[in-house]
Image 1 (cartoon, rainbow, N blue to C red):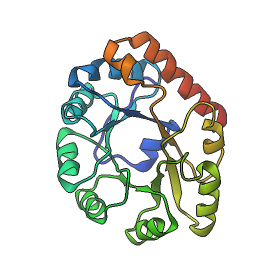
Image 2 (tube, rainbow, N blue to C red; image 1 turned 90 degrees about the vertical axis):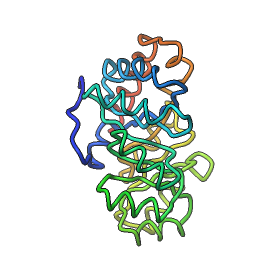
Image 3 (cartoon, rainbow, N blue to C red; image 1 turned 45 degrees about the horizontal axis):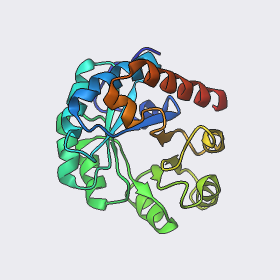
Image 4 (cartoon, rainbow, N blue to C red; image 1 turned 30 degrees about the vertical axis):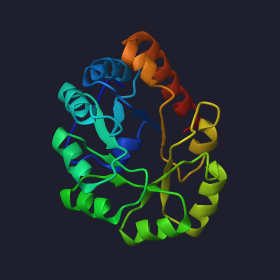
Length: 217
């Protein structure tokens, strides 16, 4: 798949359709060009640009301007960051934790949000907020696939996008679970390669991630 037309709002099905969501840290907005080329060439036209650097909003704008990548914002901690991300063109929001204020504002705006949870208590709050998809974070630290199995048995209908410690070695363990529509990870978009402008190397990693996910799903 070379790319996708971007519409507002995105849906969770749009976000999860490739099985893998690249989680990207961009130190400079100019690096978005390298990232965009590699993602589309590798058949994975989706990106979660994290708000871990001051370049995030401008990087989102540049990726959105391409018109062939579904761009979201990650590590969104506050309502202000949420609004900055949406103003930059982000079509979905991901948070490391569960903030009712951030979730409600996303719902008001009409942008999909996937907040992070790590406990049954947080899942109860997510359910009360009307959410059906959450991010398990940091997945490898809080039990990985076994934790998802345990939590999903108590919360039928809830889906999980695990992030944190997901890699090619355990990808199948996560995507093999019916309640996991996709995983988030950074192994196919290492910041060193993005910063160096190595489109070919990045494309190979991206394509390998796509193929690995397709083999499981």
